[in-house]
Image 1 (cartoon, helix red, strand yellow):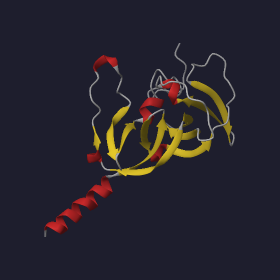
Image 2: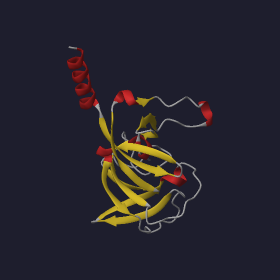
Image 3: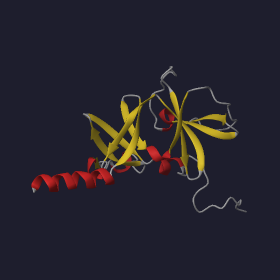
Image 4: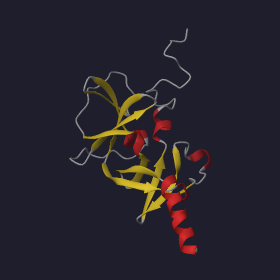
Length: 171
């Protein structure tokens, strides 16, 4: 009977679990909701945009869609890393917009249950954790589970219209 209950519980966890794309930035490994990922591309230098913040590398034309490219290493204040053949751009679909993020490399797709994701520790004002859903351990690796949509629509990114904006300019 216990075996059946354990199997049923595993089945429920499997249903509640979600898939995440894992990628590296420097020495850390991050995970984002796979449902936000549209495609993964090799890095190509984007077209520069004048007066863009340093973390905006520029834009690319992706099958007729102009896509802003964000270097997450710069956004997360990591030391600059050289662009290598492993450097990739993850094309995301967030808040009904397409945006690309530069990462050092893509690792794999993993399944995490809510129970595997622990809350991020509170670092007080010294470190902003509002874009971190939590920390997870999978296959002996510590993953920083990131709320990529929350990050991309944040005011400091200034990439996407805020959810309460309807495209009208404020006067």
